[in-house]
Length: 128
Image 1: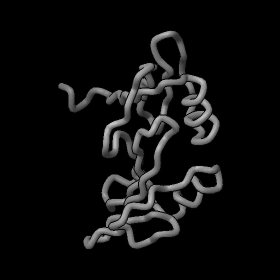
Image 2: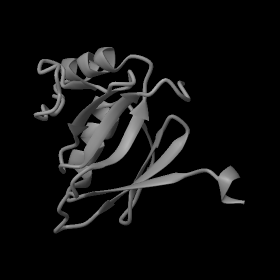
Image 3: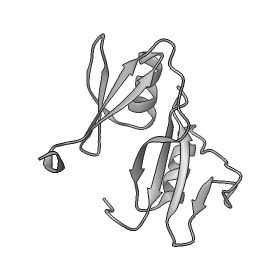
Image 4: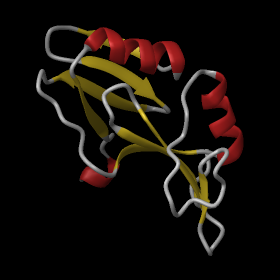
């Protein structure tokens, strides 16, 4: 039953205007709605609800990610928009922050203005 139902993602922010400027203005996602309860965006066919939590503290680890055909190119695209990837100690590509797994997968991480960790990945499966 649930395997055929659309997935809805959830993120948290302390500031709707700042989150909207990032997700709509920088990343280019379409805003479906915004009210007192949530800012709702659509990304690649998935709806993401961004709720305001005044004392929100981000968790460690990735909370949302995108499967892209070319991670270094997507990391450059982010950089052109003023978004830097995270430079973790285990990442060999210190310029773009792209980690290459032994099996060939590539991942880069970045954060939204609230510190939510987001990722770009190419695992070779399910490419859009």
